[in-house]
Image 1 (cartoon, rainbow over the protein chains, first blue to last red):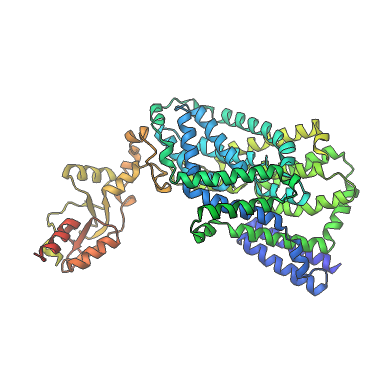
Image 2: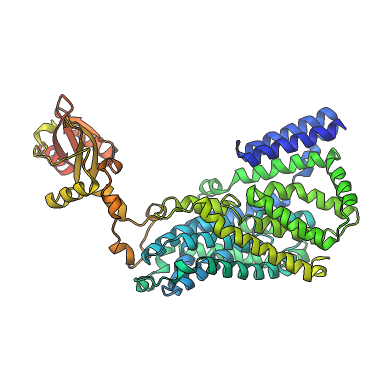
Length: 429
Length: 148
């Protein structure tokens, strides 16, 4: 009983610190993990060996591999190249520019880290909108919102998906079959809402439309040779992602092998590449795994599962829809990673208790992914775009974000809920 | 000593001047830097072409490694700061003044200019009052002249 209470206390205090942002989240996760193992050893419910087993190395390996690939692609100028190319294709029409930049950002962030994508595409976006004499705000907000939305489509598109895929043993293709169709509809709905909300800004015909035709994407590409080589490696990794469940390969193996291949082919200054890897994110994940592992070993999660089991008399479809909205609401105001890591063992427990967990996995993915759009702090991409905009003549405020982001969050969650309602059997395994 | 190569006829603006006053003086006198003075003629800041031109540079300029891929700056070529910005006091745009005394050595003055990324150095007398201004060319040519 003491173990149960103590483990819940450690978890809740850690979540409190992470949510309040009073302390760096990685420090909280590491300190919480140490406390949990200490308490576990003292009371005999959790030890170092259990903690190591509780870490999902597949998630960490996949994230590390993808981070190394992106760190190598970044200096080649490839991200800027795509933004300049899309802008030239728009021929100076604000609506076409809006759709093209949003699409490019979405496609890149379906396979690569969306924060890096947004960080590298946003400055080009700001410059091109100023060349056209327009405010960059509509373009910047929509890039973040559409990339958050698009990332939900694939196994590697955003961290909650990596976590869910690994825990539930969902393959890359499972995401393409179950998540991609929902995201495709939600993305089009999000784009339509954004076009409507920004209609006044986008109606203006720029006086300098011709300037866009003088953009030279080739000039933006600093290192064509390396860019092509890394893209071939990433393309190979994506093919292997399609096949990984048939070949019995873990996504982590695919990502780390791709990173190793790219490093062998390019041989970049390794220290510079490793400095760009977000170690704090990986340590944050590791710490959370250990904390939630303790919660599981103490029996706390089992208690929650039996509570939900007896308390949940609502139909599974409604339970799934409820999960989408609760997770989305939480993800709009706090980081979606701890929410996902904490809910994974709960859904696993419900699965063991005889409830079909598959619809719940998808509900968790949709809620965590779409919820981040609601507020300026909902996702890292939002925060980054807002910070970059502060350096411009049109800073994005929290109020501006809510006016555009919240409708997008609501519309995408409505789309997910409706598809869930209509095609529920599609989400069962 | 820097006293020997500095220009003594220096244009400056009082701290109460507006941004527009500084613009007018820089244009009419075709110069690059103005010391900003308190009522006792002590430099409290400097404002140069660079500080004013920052107002019309692309906002993402410092976030990009290069801007070569833009063949035509379009609307940015005709962008002008708002009237409200131009009527603000010059103190909103000025940088802290890095000054040297009249008796400062030339190599020292040159080193200070390099370190602070300055093209003109403000010179003050023993009371801290403005007495002259020396450019990199003034200082550099004087140093090289001693080699002849």
